[in-house]
Image 1: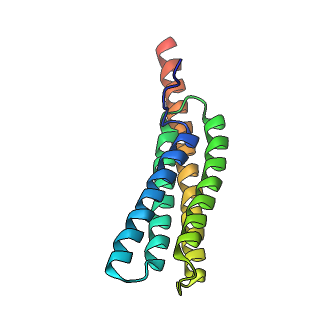
Image 2: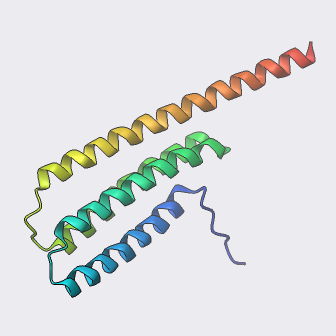
Length: 142
């Protein structure tokens, strides 16, 4: 029996965005090489964009999961994998470009901080909604 692709799973999100990032990198390399210019900065920008997209969609999809703690664990592992994939692709494809790595480190740290903040906000939103549902249920029963 075929397994259905479930985009609510952070590992599927990692696979999809990792593949999208690879395709975008290859497209950028083809376009920049045909123009005869260096694509070093562009591959880093594409990597950071893919990481930011993963961060946003991963946190938003946490809202609709049934098992929040399992999702959070898988989400953190997928985020680490996404950082490794995007940074690895950018380092491999920039091929020693003159792009300042300290600025990319700062961008990756800001995105990581945003990821943690997104997860906290979504977690608290879920708790507030669950609490409100319990209160409504208690009012209905009484």
